[in-house]
Length: 356
Image (cartoon, rainbow, N blue to C red):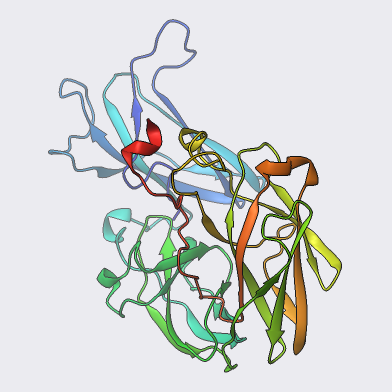
């Protein structure tokens, strides 16, 4: 059985043809068929009570078998056209079957697909890679991966879903070392039906959590470089976080060096234009400060050996008094760590005096 693309909350409605249209009431459906004879079923709803044809009460679609069979001689993509001479026919699904005894009225279009099985995990201190065997259902559209919730499918939704994939694997990252997580995988078919929940309890690999505050050296208002020193206890993949005050300029790219070697460029978050005139050095209002993760050419994880390391932020000397200011730097191997003050939105006080 093959579902039409208009199943679910959408359907195809045949209208009265205009003079420019070559054929009245045509619906084109393409599918790949192997050689053989096929019966064609259409789930339709009559929307014009005066038109001849099968009647359906209310908003219910009813299956109707089309006369004859479709004979396919060569394998490949075949267009199937349903023609209607009168206006008012709505089509929800088209079913094609090589089984002459097949009757979609006896098939459940809301039955749950088979669940995934053999759900396993590979872990690091900061990530989990889930793998599973595919559902045996033939019309699986995707797999939803949840963290949290319960085995009751009703407990899962936008608050628990962490991603969807058409593959049989999924990586969850940004996790805390030595921490337990409960994952649930649900197969979703092309009709939107959900399988039973497959559950796996996983613990990330243990690793001593480090949250390191950088010690700043040099003049905070320097126009060339600001350097922070980190004391790393154990080798670990670290994320770097900075608290900074961006200047009102066009150039928001700064160079990042680790131990004197350039790691890449980091683009600071730009101030919002309504704050343009209030946060310069000449204004009395509070300064606009952000707390963000450092991304050096897109890289956000840096593995450092035990010992002291320097993190240098290279500034643009041409900015002079309008220079960006980097206030603090923190590093952690806990990738779920968020420093105080972090907010994915703009982090500034919303007082009316700032807009006067």
